Structures are given as C-alpha cells and as structure tokens.
Image (tube, rainbow, N blue to C red; front, side, top):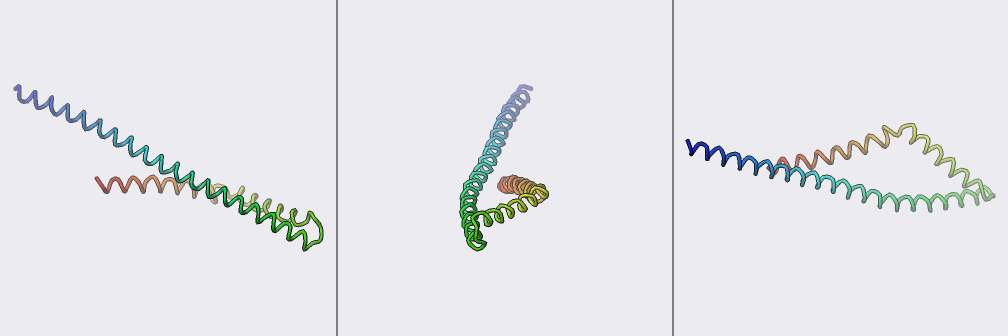
Length: 122
C-alpha cells in the first residue's frame, strides 16, 4: 500500500514538473512568435521609410519636370497631387481588401507557420 502511495506521489510530482515545463515552453514559443512579428514589422517600417523618401523625391522630380513641360511653376505639382489624391481614394475605398486583409493573412500565416515547425520537431 505504501508503494502505491509513493508511486502516486511520485507521479504527482512528475506531472507537476511536466506542467511547469509545458507552460515554460508555451511562454517561450509565444515570446519567439512575438519577437519574430516585431522584427518583421520593424523591417517593413524601415524599408517603407526609405521607399517613402524615394517616392517623395521622385514625385518632386516629376512635378518639376511636368511644370517645365507646361511652362509654369504649379501645374506639375497639381498633376502629381491629383494623382496621389486619386490613388489615396482608391486605397481608401478598397482598404480592407487591398491593405487590411493581406496584412492579417500574412500575420496569421506567419504565426501558424512557426507553430507547424515546432509541432513537427516534437
């Protein structure tokens, strides 16, 4: 009877250790996924900033070029501004389909991709 009691007590201790290790593993996986997402977002932000500067300078160049073609100082800037207004309206109307859904899908795909890799290793 004491052997059964000792075995049950030992089983309880091992179960508690297993649960603690499992919780620690879940925390580590969550931290890894979070850090991966933050790193990806930071990378996208940095690249986007350089792209925005590129687009800004190209826009100024095109506006100056068009102003020279039309012979006044403002027409090129108005044309480029109108282009960005139309582009902005298109993006606003289709923001869920064009911006929101692809971003959400990429995040979910990234989270489940990491989860599948970990499950394959276990």
